[in-house]
Length: 153
Length: 158
Image (cartoon, rainbow over all chains, first blue to last red; front, side, top):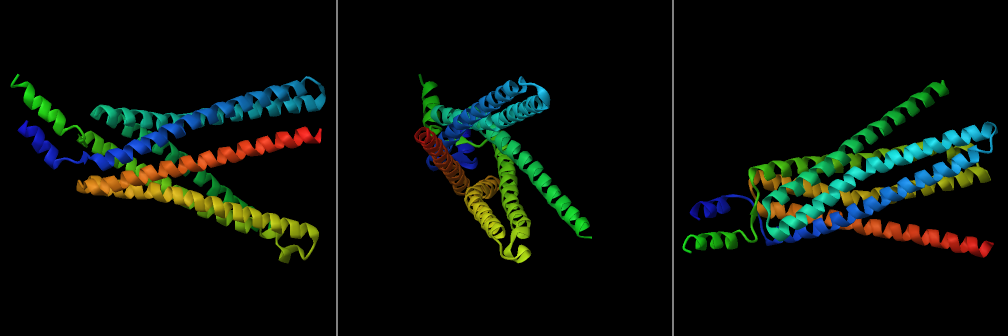
């Protein structure tokens, strides 16, 4: 008992305020995760629907039919890939919310650790995607300036 | 019976106090680091997007083409896209400001074992998710309203 008290005196703890803030953060994170799943499903269905509409145009035959089939397939693949890519950060967000709520309800250290682990995974995923997107935008901007410069000459 | 009493006291003592063990402190430091990276990337992205939109629209300015209806409409379009980017940068900037505050406060709090700083960080995290959620709800409502109006207009048009 004395060693437990000693460890509580010198360690960082989740007090009432912290617990309340984490509880609300977890609630909103879970809600965002569920909305994200709905968005991914909607995006997937849109891609599949668009692909089937374009493939029905392709059955008309002729050169436009081939273009429609290729365009439909490309859009379907793009939408499916986007839906799969967007699914994972929302899964991590949902898991963070669910595990944090469980941890605070049952005072479970392991669930709290898992919750923060999922939050780390979510932020890591978003961070890496952001770095890649920012790099691509800067690269496109530089190429655009270079192209404009060479065209003016 | 006597052995059970210390266990009950320990449980009561720990009832509101989950402690940050070494594993969790390491996790939280990583969380704070990645949160900072996300926020900084977002701020940089808004600046780059604004620069691209402003300088990319210069071809359509009235000075370049002289006054014509086409140039006038294009410059209006350009102005609209700049305003749009400014508004989204402002909203995104506010959201990511709270993410940055969470990263800074929580990271500092865990380093210095300061519960107040950590709580400040968690409060910022709460506000970040709350604003994100509210904006998403508003956006989805607007999209749903737009679809409804389009369906009604299509129905009336027939």
